[in-house]
Length: 51
Image (cartoon, rainbow, N blue to C red; front, side, top):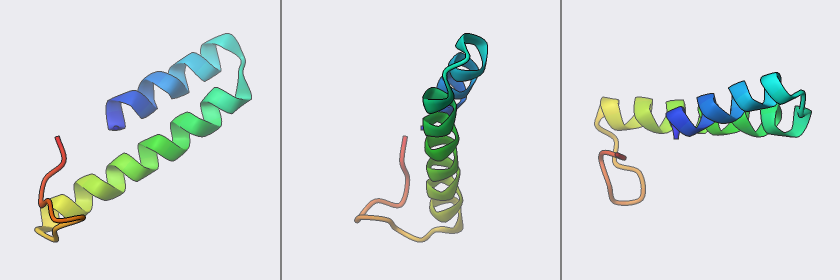
């Protein structure tokens, strides 16, 4: 999710589409939150890691 967020963010900035930039930021933040919670060892939805 982090990589997808970065790709959407870059595409939104390069092509000048604010919707892609916003979605990219949201996906990036959600991916970072899932990564942090997984790294702490807290299972999310029954899974301790998201790959």
